Image (cartoon, rainbow, N blue to C red):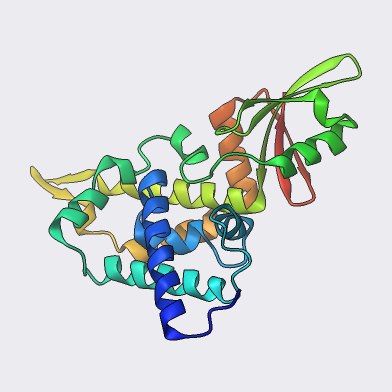
Length: 233
């Protein structure tokens, strides 16, 4: 099926707008971060298309990209109702602690992760149990041994990176500077764009891997295979 006329395009723009709104509210993601969480060409973008039964519609990718662009601009340009603005300023849309960085907006694990684990441990899929799909935690039985495994794809690691940036920025902006008994909020002093650019230069894959290792426990060993990152215990 193809989008061939304005009526068809309007229909799918309405459908995608509703789906994106649902995605935003379910995952607690600010509109301005959508292009990071649903990055064009990423596995997560394709999962969004497939999960919502849109994969056979020719031209749907462009519709989704346009809707995401419009919603991002609405927040950045301040074109939101007061109620909507307050909604996005609530704690549901903030990364409030370090652990939350590992789960917010990342989504549940999938069969690809299980197959990667099976290949690494030379095990059958029947030897792998999902302990917590939200936390990407598995248990694998192999050669009379058992291991706990946490696994993320590169796309998922990128989302965790965005969460960490949000967390660090929020932590910084909440602080106050006390100068001669005059309290000044850091939020009034910091250039958010410069701070984010600085974080981009500091948060390499290795830095993020070390961050996750400390968050889940130093007794996990790390491994990288075929674009996937694993923590094995």
